[in-house]
Image (cartoon, rainbow, N blue to C red; front, side):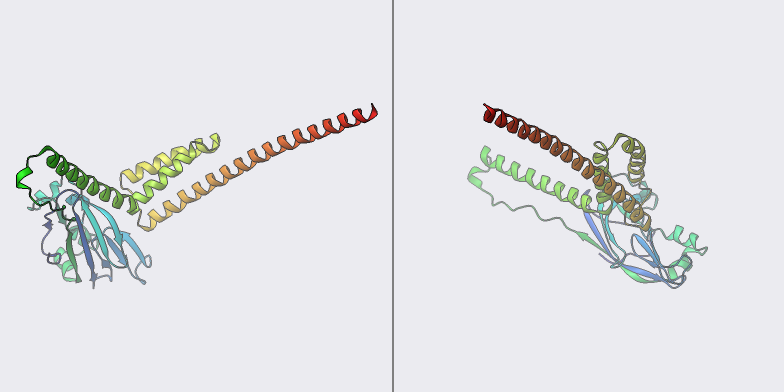
Length: 281
């Protein structure tokens, strides 16, 4: 497909739910030096606040019926999957869903310039690529047994396998995405809390529930600087839980060893007493 057209407010992408798109490239703004790709804005040294990467780029994926599964602010490559969710913004902008609505208006407003001034400051390009799913396996027609139950059953099984394989691929990509990895971390820490010290668990559990709600509401982008900060905190909590579990296990092992040693010492003492008694006789 041709590069993203800045003169259009939105562009329809002909993909079915579960279909994947890849956007590569970025625009450099001569107005403030920012580097804007499809999903992030990179600020260079010398700008207010210093060098940083902010979530939010040229495209509002969620409004257009897409979910970002991966982004790379260095290579400026973004991968998104069509969710099949309603996208009324597309209809308002006069295009069919799903679509890629441009954030030209909020980006220009945040800089106190007009949309035309903002567009004219952008140099570069973002190319859109539709990632075609693997073609289904081809089956040679068998005229003489086309309606045989075994043939129909085999075709049904193959079709089901293709659907299951596609669903597995989508789930795997979502799990490996930043939001998927963050949700897995929250779930892992929550599981460990169920066997932790009751006082510690009672203190930390409400915070874990809050973290889960923040992720569900997409209030923090896991790939952003703030998302990394949340991840670091969760990893510290997990480390504390692992240390406490290791200490509890070591204490139980020591208690078991002490009990066994005392029992063996008592048995040895009893054996010595019995031996002395037998010699006296």
